[in-house]
Image (tube, rainbow, N blue to C red):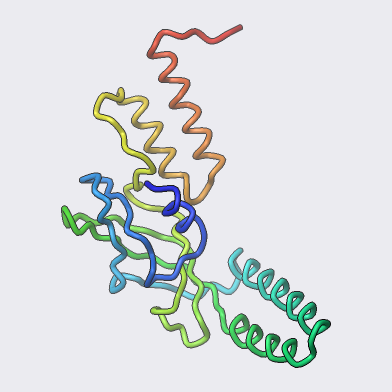
Length: 186
């Protein structure tokens, strides 16, 4: 997967501009979100609600700085930012991604930011789990199965727990070193 795509999907991304992803079945970069499959439920008590509140606070601090420089622009910016951020709601979602090449599907769950009208077309999502996991990089067919399993588990944890993902990646490297005959230093 390209670095730009990883950076784009690690945070909230608008549904309409969600990038195509590599398919875990055919390894082609042709996995698209199926917008008709998206189902969600509003969640008032999750961490995204805290993130939205933090963004609001930062935005209003910015408005205060603008207001100090120019009263007219400060009031205008305050009204615009206030209208946009107060209307956001947090939700949990589930959806499917479909490969345009092999037509197989991958399920995805995560968190969604919606506007007050709950218009799905303007929503942003952050996928926290893909099943099966999408590959972060190509895996050669020459990779031993025990190392392949660790790498796939690393891919699986990448979107929800980056520390666990890194730990699984480290275990894959350790297994590779053991397979190559390197001994651990005592």
